[in-house]
Length: 149
Image (tube, rainbow, N blue to C red; front, side):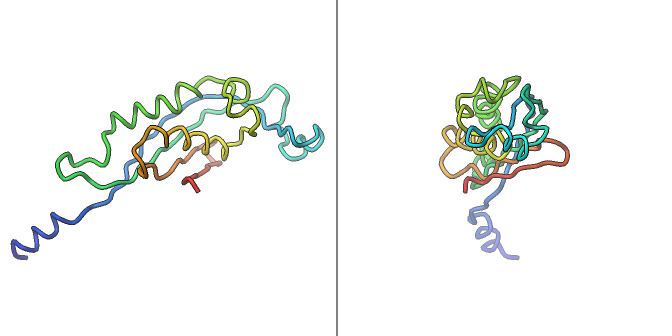
């Protein structure tokens, strides 16, 4: 391979993905104000218990972007960590989602809606079009993925 081929490869814009994982604990009750108590019990089962229940959530935040030729980074992980602290840990960790997070006053606190909440919160902090995916592990067997669609 000649020198010109190497130079051309160095000029190609490379796109990469980085993911940071964060865990937090929170409780909630699955209950829709649009349904009767009977329908809520039927739809949500034990997750509709009046006293709620808790989870140890694991959130994976993935960003997508150009690998900077100077820094070699897509995004500084220190910045991503701070954004996740602000958008996830401060408002959600050790909270009752339904009572402590205003967003969930009228939105059912499913993991799907939690992913939307986290996306919307991070989208205000992360540079435009870099946020790629939110993946939330509610349990070892239940995982939700949201990509802003």
